[in-house]
Image (cartoon, rainbow, N blue to C red; front, side, top):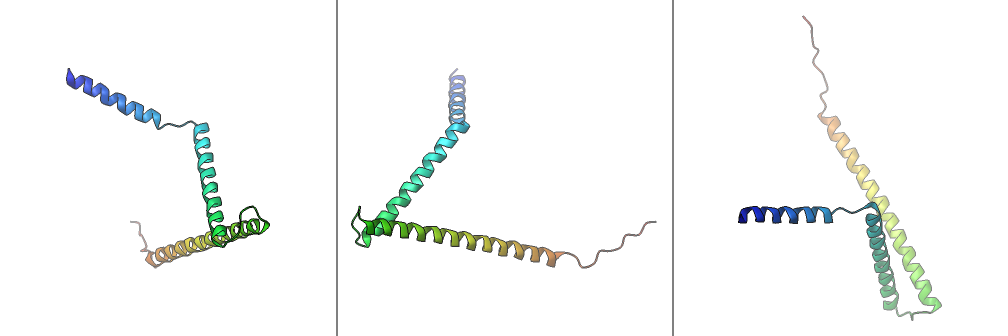
Length: 114
């Protein structure tokens, strides 16, 4: 009898875990939105930390200019990194194409029919 109850308990735990892992599309969207907001907040804190380290006083025009300049620099770096990543991926694809071309037979034996 204990084996049966243990099996039902394990099944219940499994089903609960399985069902709790299923998210609706709306829940998935909400989670993605929350993650986006957290990333934006972290980026804002990073910008503030940099401008603070440069000695700018908060709520001044200079501080705002610093924040905008740092954000612009981050965007430019992200763009450059994206371009470099695409170039690296294209170089890698070309290298694999070259390897495949080098491994192709240069001749194909002729098949004769009898």
